[in-house]
Length: 403
Image (cartoon, helix red, strand yellow):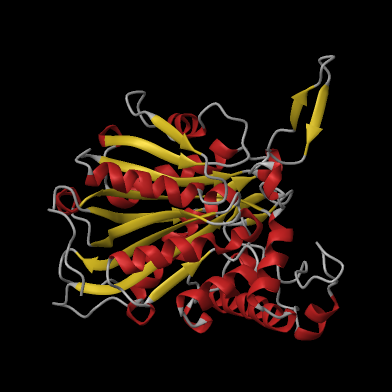
């Protein structure tokens, strides 16, 4: 068992984590802007923890394709937090939600004190059109921002996923089987109501939205085999073994271990360490493995020591390649399915990983009288050739079993 890294007044711990349903782009949430997705999650965290709104030190939120203007501040005020509570928005593209949590954890560890609401949000459905200004002042619209200098090729994520498959020998059949299993697991989790306790229902034009819409019951191996390659004629990445774009928000309440106990929090995820690493942008999907490998080595933790793993399944190829590189059996990762089935809401996805880990850890919590619980790892690969990873340990703070 790893010892606590810091004294109680500086040891970061996630004491609550919530998310919205994850819905396909231009679906049920097509009219909800980012702050409207996020505000109910922030309110839910206050209700769940008993943390007074005025006691929030800062709201730290990741966002990738929004319209700017500091969505963290906008959502905080929309959620009813007092004007005295500030907000800051983080952009590390797909890693933004996890990096926002990492930033909040580091603020606690640095002696920043207080309590933070941290996570991510993405409303791809309402994301603004992007344009550069031409010499004559007219707009020149572009599909996405540039991630790296053109000398690296600045590959799209899908093309880079094909590169990863080729370089690391991840076959089309293996990718398809992994994606199909992600759907199967997500459907089983939904049927068992495993997502209910972590999900905040939202009011949309169609009514109350309380569940995800991504997992497909009728998806079969035969159907998966019919999807053609998307990004390269001889590639192996298809629409079936890639994630789909989604709208969602997810956030956590994070504070010091000392403050958590003062609030009466029954349990939480102690943040043992975090890391972010860079890799060749042409194989950007390997960023998570680089960050996680370095993080585990720093803490003398092996793959066998990790009990729970959540990896953002943007593409089956990069998920499998990263797990292989770390020596983690894919059977042990994403126990309730991942983004291949649930969808990828860019800036929110990294925070969804932490929300899922807390829910899963509670299901495997130690018996009464035991204190330490499972080790958990969240990791995500990021556009531009980066990855972020965070290592947690679940712990009962009151010495009793979760219900």
